[in-house]
Amino acid sequence: MNPAGLHLRFDKIDEQVTPGGHSTARYRVYAEGAPENKVYAFGTWFMTNAPAIDPHDYYVNGQGLLMRHSLSPSRN
Image (cartoon, rainbow, N blue to C red; front, top):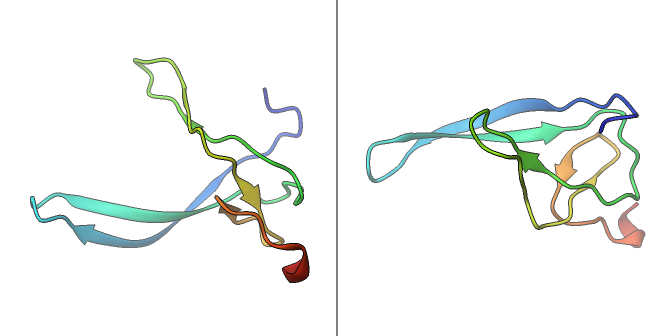
């Protein structure tokens, strides 16, 4: 399911404490080498469940950053 051999890199941005006292980390996700101008799917797979695919489209910018919004043609 990964013929191009792409991999993801997760860079931690920060960590916040929720009102309930739980710690939540935020990450930027990079898919270095992934072509721009394509629509990607993103999913999670917990070993005890079937993979869950996010219903949103994802895009990659020139630095490999995975984003939920495409860059407008004037910004490319």
